[in-house]
Length: 421
Ligand SMILES: [Zn+2]
Image 1 (cartoon, rainbow, N blue to C red):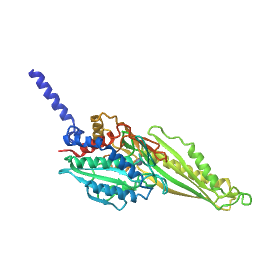
Image 2 (cartoon, rainbow, N blue to C red):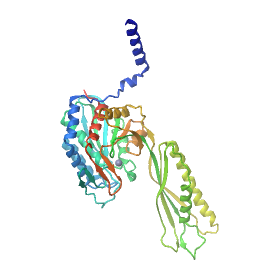
Image 3 (cartoon, rainbow, N blue to C red):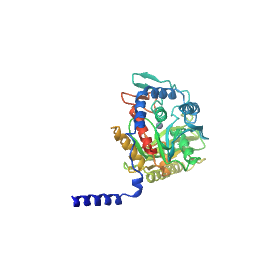
Image 4 (cartoon, helix red, strand yellow):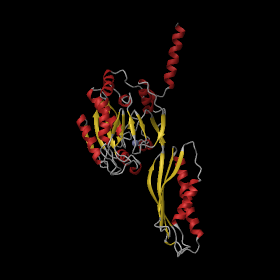
Protein backbone atom coordinates (compact mmCIF):
# COMPACT_ATOMS: atom_id res chain seq x y z
CA UNK A 1 0.00 0.00 0.00
CA UNK A 2 2.65 2.37 1.07
CA UNK A 3 4.70 1.73 -2.05
CA UNK A 4 1.67 2.13 -4.34
CA UNK A 5 0.75 5.32 -2.61
CA UNK A 6 4.25 6.69 -2.97
CA UNK A 7 4.38 5.68 -6.61
CA UNK A 8 1.10 7.37 -7.32
CA UNK A 9 2.21 10.61 -5.70
CA UNK A 10 5.49 10.51 -7.58
CA UNK A 11 3.75 9.98 -10.93
CA UNK A 12 1.28 12.73 -10.24
CA UNK A 13 4.05 15.09 -9.20
CA UNK A 14 6.06 14.22 -12.28
CA UNK A 15 3.03 14.75 -14.51
CA UNK A 16 2.35 18.17 -13.01
CA UNK A 17 5.99 19.11 -13.37
CA UNK A 18 5.88 18.19 -17.05
CA UNK A 19 2.86 20.37 -17.80
CA UNK A 20 3.97 23.91 -18.53
CA UNK A 21 2.58 26.48 -16.12
CA UNK A 22 0.78 28.25 -18.93
CA UNK A 23 -1.23 25.15 -19.82
CA UNK A 24 -2.32 24.77 -16.20
CA UNK A 25 -3.43 28.39 -16.12
CA UNK A 26 -5.35 27.90 -19.33
CA UNK A 27 -7.60 25.00 -18.40
CA UNK A 28 -10.06 24.32 -21.18
CA UNK A 29 -13.11 23.61 -19.08
CA UNK A 30 -16.66 24.84 -19.54
CA UNK A 31 -19.15 25.56 -16.72
CA UNK A 32 -21.75 23.11 -18.03
CA UNK A 33 -22.91 22.22 -14.51
CA UNK A 34 -23.27 25.78 -13.26
CA UNK A 35 -26.95 26.35 -12.34
CA UNK A 36 -27.23 29.77 -14.01
CA UNK A 37 -25.51 28.51 -17.17
CA UNK A 38 -27.91 25.56 -17.30
CA UNK A 39 -30.85 27.91 -16.85
CA UNK A 40 -29.49 30.13 -19.63
CA UNK A 41 -29.18 27.16 -21.99
CA UNK A 42 -32.73 26.05 -21.18
CA UNK A 43 -33.98 29.52 -21.94
CA UNK A 44 -32.31 29.46 -25.34
CA UNK A 45 -34.26 26.31 -26.19
CA UNK A 46 -37.51 27.66 -24.73
CA UNK A 47 -37.20 30.97 -26.57
CA UNK A 48 -36.12 29.51 -29.89
CA UNK A 49 -38.95 31.34 -31.69
CA UNK A 50 -37.54 34.67 -30.44
CA UNK A 51 -34.15 33.84 -31.98
CA UNK A 52 -35.73 32.89 -35.30
CA UNK A 53 -37.85 36.05 -35.36
CA UNK A 54 -34.69 38.13 -34.85
CA UNK A 55 -33.02 36.22 -37.68
CA UNK A 56 -35.91 37.03 -40.04
CA UNK A 57 -36.22 40.68 -38.97
CA UNK A 58 -32.48 41.30 -39.39
CA UNK A 59 -32.50 39.59 -42.78
CA UNK A 60 -35.33 41.71 -44.12
CA UNK A 61 -33.28 44.88 -43.59
CA UNK A 62 -31.02 45.20 -46.67
CA UNK A 63 -27.30 45.33 -45.91
CA UNK A 64 -25.32 45.55 -49.18
CA UNK A 65 -21.54 45.97 -48.97
CA UNK A 66 -20.72 49.45 -47.61
CA UNK A 67 -24.43 50.03 -46.88
CA UNK A 68 -24.90 48.20 -43.59
CA UNK A 69 -26.15 51.26 -41.68
CA UNK A 70 -29.87 50.39 -41.49
CA UNK A 71 -29.23 46.85 -40.28
CA UNK A 72 -26.60 48.21 -37.89
CA UNK A 73 -29.13 50.64 -36.38
CA UNK A 74 -31.57 47.79 -35.74
CA UNK A 75 -28.81 45.65 -34.21
CA UNK A 76 -27.68 48.57 -32.05
CA UNK A 77 -31.24 49.11 -30.79
CA UNK A 78 -31.49 45.42 -29.87
CA UNK A 79 -28.26 45.60 -27.86
CA UNK A 80 -29.63 48.63 -26.03
CA UNK A 81 -32.98 46.93 -25.41
CA UNK A 82 -31.22 43.86 -24.01
CA UNK A 83 -29.47 46.06 -21.45
CA UNK A 84 -25.89 46.14 -22.70
CA UNK A 85 -23.82 49.13 -21.67
CA UNK A 86 -21.77 51.56 -23.77
CA UNK A 87 -23.66 50.61 -26.91
CA UNK A 88 -22.03 52.49 -29.75
CA UNK A 89 -21.18 52.57 -33.46
CA UNK A 90 -17.50 53.06 -34.24
CA UNK A 91 -16.03 55.17 -37.04
CA UNK A 92 -16.13 52.27 -39.49
CA UNK A 93 -19.74 51.29 -38.74
CA UNK A 94 -19.23 48.37 -36.35
CA UNK A 95 -21.91 48.16 -33.65
CA UNK A 96 -20.49 47.42 -30.19
CA UNK A 97 -22.11 46.74 -26.81
CA UNK A 98 -20.60 45.61 -23.50
CA UNK A 99 -21.58 43.13 -20.84
CA UNK A 100 -19.35 43.51 -17.80
CA UNK A 101 -18.78 40.79 -15.25
CA UNK A 102 -18.46 41.42 -11.51
CA UNK A 103 -14.78 40.57 -11.36
CA UNK A 104 -11.79 41.17 -13.53
CA UNK A 105 -11.12 38.67 -16.27
CA UNK A 106 -10.53 38.40 -20.00
CA UNK A 107 -12.21 40.45 -22.72
CA UNK A 108 -14.05 38.26 -25.22
CA UNK A 109 -15.56 39.51 -28.47
CA UNK A 110 -18.63 37.67 -29.75
CA UNK A 111 -19.53 38.96 -33.19
CA UNK A 112 -21.59 38.43 -36.31
CA UNK A 113 -21.25 40.34 -39.56
CA UNK A 114 -23.87 42.84 -40.68
CA UNK A 115 -23.07 42.89 -44.40
CA UNK A 116 -24.28 40.60 -47.16
CA UNK A 117 -23.04 39.99 -50.70
CA UNK A 118 -26.34 41.17 -52.20
CA UNK A 119 -26.54 44.51 -54.03
CA UNK A 120 -29.08 47.26 -53.39
CA UNK A 121 -32.52 46.41 -54.71
CA UNK A 122 -32.31 42.69 -53.94
CA UNK A 123 -35.62 41.33 -52.63
CA UNK A 124 -34.72 40.33 -49.07
CA UNK A 125 -38.19 39.18 -47.99
CA UNK A 126 -37.95 35.94 -46.03
CA UNK A 127 -40.44 33.13 -46.58
CA UNK A 128 -41.11 30.38 -44.06
CA UNK A 129 -41.86 26.78 -44.98
CA UNK A 130 -42.20 24.79 -41.79
CA UNK A 131 -38.82 24.95 -40.05
CA UNK A 132 -37.18 26.39 -43.17
CA UNK A 133 -36.49 30.08 -43.69
CA UNK A 134 -35.67 31.18 -47.23
CA UNK A 135 -34.09 34.52 -48.12
CA UNK A 136 -30.77 36.03 -49.22
CA UNK A 137 -28.47 36.25 -46.20
CA UNK A 138 -30.70 34.22 -43.87
CA UNK A 139 -27.80 31.96 -42.87
CA UNK A 140 -24.84 34.17 -43.75
CA UNK A 141 -24.96 35.99 -41.51
CA UNK A 142 -28.40 36.74 -40.08
CA UNK A 143 -28.05 33.47 -38.21
CA UNK A 144 -24.83 34.66 -36.57
CA UNK A 145 -26.33 38.02 -35.60
CA UNK A 146 -29.47 36.39 -34.14
CA UNK A 147 -27.35 33.88 -32.21
CA UNK A 148 -25.23 36.62 -30.63
CA UNK A 149 -28.46 38.35 -29.52
CA UNK A 150 -29.91 35.10 -28.12
CA UNK A 151 -26.72 34.32 -26.19
CA UNK A 152 -26.53 37.85 -24.76
CA UNK A 153 -30.21 37.87 -23.79
CA UNK A 154 -29.95 34.55 -22.00
CA UNK A 155 -26.73 35.43 -20.15
CA UNK A 156 -28.38 38.63 -18.88
CA UNK A 157 -31.81 37.16 -18.06
CA UNK A 158 -30.27 34.38 -16.00
CA UNK A 159 -27.66 36.60 -14.34
CA UNK A 160 -24.83 34.27 -15.31
CA UNK A 161 -21.96 35.55 -13.10
CA UNK A 162 -19.32 35.95 -15.78
CA UNK A 163 -15.91 37.40 -15.04
CA UNK A 164 -14.23 39.83 -17.39
CA UNK A 165 -16.04 41.56 -20.19
CA UNK A 166 -18.06 40.36 -23.15
CA UNK A 167 -18.17 42.64 -26.18
CA UNK A 168 -21.02 41.97 -28.59
CA UNK A 169 -20.12 43.26 -32.04
CA UNK A 170 -21.91 43.51 -35.37
CA UNK A 171 -19.11 43.99 -37.90
CA UNK A 172 -19.27 45.67 -41.28
CA UNK A 173 -17.38 44.63 -44.40
CA UNK A 174 -16.80 40.90 -43.85
CA UNK A 175 -17.75 39.84 -47.37
CA UNK A 176 -15.44 40.17 -50.39
CA UNK A 177 -15.78 43.85 -51.31
CA UNK A 178 -15.48 44.97 -47.68
CA UNK A 179 -12.12 43.22 -47.32
CA UNK A 180 -12.61 42.80 -43.53
CA UNK A 181 -12.73 46.57 -43.04
CA UNK A 182 -14.86 46.24 -39.89
CA UNK A 183 -12.71 43.74 -38.06
CA UNK A 184 -9.56 45.58 -39.18
CA UNK A 185 -10.94 48.78 -37.60
CA UNK A 186 -11.84 46.88 -34.42
CA UNK A 187 -8.30 45.56 -34.01
CA UNK A 188 -6.56 48.80 -34.95
CA UNK A 189 -8.87 51.14 -32.96
CA UNK A 190 -9.23 51.89 -29.23
CA UNK A 191 -9.94 48.23 -28.31
CA UNK A 192 -6.77 47.09 -30.09
CA UNK A 193 -4.80 45.92 -27.08
CA UNK A 194 -7.64 44.76 -24.86
CA UNK A 195 -9.21 41.86 -26.76
CA UNK A 196 -8.09 38.46 -25.41
CA UNK A 197 -10.36 36.20 -27.46
CA UNK A 198 -12.33 36.73 -30.65
CA UNK A 199 -15.28 34.53 -31.61
CA UNK A 200 -17.19 35.23 -34.80
CA UNK A 201 -20.49 33.44 -35.37
CA UNK A 202 -20.82 33.02 -39.10
CA UNK A 203 -23.20 30.77 -40.96
CA UNK A 204 -24.83 27.47 -40.11
CA UNK A 205 -24.00 24.00 -38.85
CA UNK A 206 -21.65 23.09 -36.00
CA UNK A 207 -17.96 23.54 -36.83
CA UNK A 208 -14.95 25.47 -35.58
CA UNK A 209 -12.94 27.46 -38.11
CA UNK A 210 -9.45 27.96 -36.69
CA UNK A 211 -7.60 28.04 -40.01
CA UNK A 212 -7.67 31.35 -41.83
CA UNK A 213 -7.58 30.86 -45.59
CA UNK A 214 -5.73 33.83 -47.01
CA UNK A 215 -6.78 35.48 -50.23
CA UNK A 216 -5.43 37.93 -52.74
CA UNK A 217 -7.77 39.48 -55.29
CA UNK A 218 -6.80 41.77 -58.13
CA UNK A 219 -8.20 43.50 -61.18
CA UNK A 220 -5.73 43.47 -64.06
CA UNK A 221 -6.47 46.09 -66.72
CA UNK A 222 -4.68 46.24 -70.08
CA UNK A 223 -5.01 49.41 -72.13
CA UNK A 224 -3.93 50.21 -75.70
CA UNK A 225 -4.60 52.79 -78.42
CA UNK A 226 -7.71 51.08 -79.85
CA UNK A 227 -8.85 51.31 -83.48
CA UNK A 228 -10.72 49.77 -86.39
CA UNK A 229 -10.42 45.99 -86.65
CA UNK A 230 -9.65 46.21 -90.39
CA UNK A 231 -8.30 49.71 -90.89
CA UNK A 232 -5.99 49.66 -87.86
CA UNK A 233 -4.97 46.04 -88.12
CA UNK A 234 -1.48 45.61 -86.67
CA UNK A 235 -2.32 47.39 -83.41
CA UNK A 236 -1.69 45.73 -80.09
CA UNK A 237 -4.93 44.25 -78.78
CA UNK A 238 -5.74 44.48 -75.04
CA UNK A 239 -8.34 41.71 -75.29
CA UNK A 240 -5.79 39.39 -76.88
CA UNK A 241 -3.32 40.27 -74.11
CA UNK A 242 -5.91 39.44 -71.48
CA UNK A 243 -6.66 36.19 -73.32
CA UNK A 244 -2.98 35.24 -73.21
CA UNK A 245 -2.79 36.08 -69.52
CA UNK A 246 -5.87 34.07 -68.59
CA UNK A 247 -4.66 31.08 -70.64
CA UNK A 248 -1.32 31.14 -68.78
CA UNK A 249 -3.03 31.47 -65.40
CA UNK A 250 -5.38 28.62 -66.32
CA UNK A 251 -2.39 26.31 -66.81
CA UNK A 252 -0.81 27.10 -63.42
CA UNK A 253 -0.18 24.21 -61.04
CA UNK A 254 -0.81 24.82 -57.34
CA UNK A 255 -0.44 22.52 -54.34
CA UNK A 256 -3.42 20.62 -52.96
CA UNK A 257 -1.71 20.67 -49.53
CA UNK A 258 -1.85 23.41 -48.26
CA UNK A 259 -5.07 23.85 -50.21
CA UNK A 260 -4.48 26.63 -52.75
CA UNK A 261 -6.88 27.84 -55.42
CA UNK A 262 -7.24 30.43 -58.17
CA UNK A 263 -10.03 31.61 -60.44
CA UNK A 264 -10.68 34.39 -62.92
CA UNK A 265 -14.20 35.39 -61.96
CA UNK A 266 -14.96 38.31 -64.23
CA UNK A 267 -13.76 39.66 -67.58
CA UNK A 268 -14.70 42.94 -69.20
CA UNK A 269 -13.70 44.97 -72.24
CA UNK A 270 -14.50 45.76 -75.83
CA UNK A 271 -17.01 47.95 -77.62
CA UNK A 272 -17.97 46.09 -80.79
CA UNK A 273 -17.02 43.18 -83.01
CA UNK A 274 -15.16 45.40 -85.46
CA UNK A 275 -13.16 47.42 -82.93
CA UNK A 276 -9.72 46.68 -81.56
CA UNK A 277 -10.62 47.52 -78.00
CA UNK A 278 -8.78 50.20 -76.05
CA UNK A 279 -9.05 48.18 -72.88
CA UNK A 280 -9.81 44.85 -71.29
CA UNK A 281 -9.66 43.63 -67.72
CA UNK A 282 -10.16 40.59 -65.55
CA UNK A 283 -10.63 39.93 -61.83
CA UNK A 284 -8.64 37.14 -60.21
CA UNK A 285 -9.21 35.46 -56.85
CA UNK A 286 -6.39 33.38 -55.27
CA UNK A 287 -6.55 31.62 -51.91
CA UNK A 288 -4.35 29.48 -49.76
CA UNK A 289 -4.22 28.08 -46.25
CA UNK A 290 -0.54 29.08 -46.23
CA UNK A 291 0.59 32.68 -46.44
CA UNK A 292 3.94 31.61 -47.95
CA UNK A 293 2.22 29.67 -50.73
CA UNK A 294 -0.20 32.52 -51.36
CA UNK A 295 2.71 34.93 -51.76
CA UNK A 296 4.45 32.52 -54.15
CA UNK A 297 1.38 32.09 -56.34
CA UNK A 298 0.73 35.83 -56.23
CA UNK A 299 4.26 36.57 -57.47
CA UNK A 300 3.93 33.93 -60.20
CA UNK A 301 0.63 35.36 -61.44
CA UNK A 302 1.99 38.90 -61.58
CA UNK A 303 4.88 37.61 -63.72
CA UNK A 304 2.58 35.60 -66.01
CA UNK A 305 0.42 38.66 -66.65
CA UNK A 306 3.45 40.88 -67.38
CA UNK A 307 4.80 38.20 -69.74
CA UNK A 308 1.44 37.93 -71.51
CA UNK A 309 1.28 41.68 -72.07
CA UNK A 310 4.90 41.65 -73.34
CA UNK A 311 4.10 38.75 -75.69
CA UNK A 312 1.14 40.61 -77.16
CA UNK A 313 3.32 43.71 -77.60
CA UNK A 314 6.05 41.62 -79.29
CA UNK A 315 3.51 40.00 -81.62
CA UNK A 316 2.87 43.42 -83.23
CA UNK A 317 6.32 45.04 -83.58
CA UNK A 318 4.97 47.77 -85.88
CA UNK A 319 2.04 48.75 -83.69
CA UNK A 320 1.74 52.51 -83.40
CA UNK A 321 0.74 52.29 -79.74
CA UNK A 322 1.85 50.40 -76.69
CA UNK A 323 0.04 48.34 -74.12
CA UNK A 324 -0.16 49.40 -70.50
CA UNK A 325 -0.88 47.19 -67.55
CA UNK A 326 -2.63 48.47 -64.46
CA UNK A 327 -3.05 46.28 -61.36
CA UNK A 328 -5.67 47.21 -58.76
CA UNK A 329 -5.90 45.36 -55.48
CA UNK A 330 -9.47 44.32 -54.72
CA UNK A 331 -8.59 42.71 -51.41
CA UNK A 332 -5.88 40.95 -49.44
CA UNK A 333 -6.70 38.73 -46.48
CA UNK A 334 -3.94 37.21 -44.40
CA UNK A 335 -3.67 33.44 -43.87
CA UNK A 336 -2.81 31.76 -40.59
CA UNK A 337 -3.96 29.37 -37.90
CA UNK A 338 -5.13 29.45 -34.32
CA UNK A 339 -3.45 26.22 -33.14
CA UNK A 340 -5.64 23.18 -32.42
CA UNK A 341 -3.97 23.11 -28.99
CA UNK A 342 -4.88 26.72 -28.14
CA UNK A 343 -7.24 27.37 -25.26
CA UNK A 344 -9.93 28.98 -27.43
CA UNK A 345 -10.15 25.90 -29.68
CA UNK A 346 -10.10 23.49 -26.75
CA UNK A 347 -12.84 25.40 -24.92
CA UNK A 348 -14.97 25.35 -28.09
CA UNK A 349 -14.44 21.59 -28.33
CA UNK A 350 -15.15 21.07 -24.62
CA UNK A 351 -18.40 23.03 -25.02
CA UNK A 352 -19.38 20.85 -27.98
CA UNK A 353 -18.51 17.67 -26.02
CA UNK A 354 -20.65 18.82 -23.09
CA UNK A 355 -23.62 19.12 -25.46
CA UNK A 356 -22.74 15.90 -27.34
CA UNK A 357 -22.21 17.84 -30.55
CA UNK A 358 -19.61 16.97 -33.17
CA UNK A 359 -17.62 20.11 -34.01
CA UNK A 360 -14.91 19.49 -36.62
CA UNK A 361 -12.05 21.93 -37.19
CA UNK A 362 -11.69 23.56 -40.56
CA UNK A 363 -10.23 26.47 -42.50
CA UNK A 364 -12.09 29.30 -44.19
CA UNK A 365 -11.98 33.01 -44.90
CA UNK A 366 -13.84 34.96 -42.24
CA UNK A 367 -13.61 37.89 -39.83
CA UNK A 368 -11.27 35.72 -37.71
CA UNK A 369 -8.56 36.01 -40.41
CA UNK A 370 -7.48 39.42 -39.22
CA UNK A 371 -7.02 38.71 -35.48
CA UNK A 372 -5.43 35.35 -36.39
CA UNK A 373 -2.87 37.24 -38.48
CA UNK A 374 -2.12 39.37 -35.40
CA UNK A 375 -1.61 36.27 -33.24
CA UNK A 376 -4.76 36.92 -31.17
CA UNK A 377 -6.69 33.74 -30.29
CA UNK A 378 -9.59 33.79 -32.74
CA UNK A 379 -12.07 31.35 -34.22
CA UNK A 380 -15.24 31.42 -36.25
CA UNK A 381 -18.04 29.11 -35.18
CA UNK A 382 -21.24 28.08 -36.92
CA UNK A 383 -24.59 29.11 -35.51
CA UNK A 384 -26.41 25.76 -35.65
CA UNK A 385 -29.19 24.56 -37.95
CA UNK A 386 -28.64 23.53 -41.56
CA UNK A 387 -27.88 26.06 -44.27
CA UNK A 388 -28.05 25.81 -48.04
CA UNK A 389 -26.90 27.95 -50.96
CA UNK A 390 -25.26 30.81 -49.10
CA UNK A 391 -24.44 33.84 -51.29
CA UNK A 392 -27.35 32.92 -53.59
CA UNK A 393 -30.88 34.30 -53.85
CA UNK A 394 -32.24 30.86 -52.83
CA UNK A 395 -30.29 30.82 -49.60
CA UNK A 396 -32.09 28.89 -46.87
CA UNK A 397 -31.75 28.04 -43.21
CA UNK A 398 -33.46 24.99 -41.69
CA UNK A 399 -33.86 25.05 -37.92
CA UNK A 400 -35.09 21.38 -37.94
CA UNK A 401 -35.61 20.14 -34.38
CA UNK A 402 -32.39 21.32 -32.78
CA UNK A 403 -31.22 24.63 -34.24
CA UNK A 404 -31.12 25.99 -30.68
CA UNK A 405 -28.09 23.82 -29.96
CA UNK A 406 -25.98 26.32 -31.94
CA UNK A 407 -26.59 29.23 -29.52
CA UNK A 408 -26.43 26.84 -26.55
CA UNK A 409 -22.98 25.74 -27.68
CA UNK A 410 -21.82 29.32 -28.15
CA UNK A 411 -23.19 30.38 -24.75
CA UNK A 412 -21.20 27.59 -23.15
CA UNK A 413 -18.09 28.48 -25.16
CA UNK A 414 -18.28 32.16 -24.19
CA UNK A 415 -18.95 31.28 -20.52
CA UNK A 416 -15.92 29.00 -20.57
CA UNK A 417 -13.65 31.66 -22.09
CA UNK A 418 -14.80 34.37 -19.69
CA UNK A 419 -15.09 32.18 -16.61
CA UNK A 420 -18.09 31.96 -14.29
CA UNK A 421 -17.71 32.57 -10.55
ZN1 LIG B 1 -20.43 35.17 -43.52
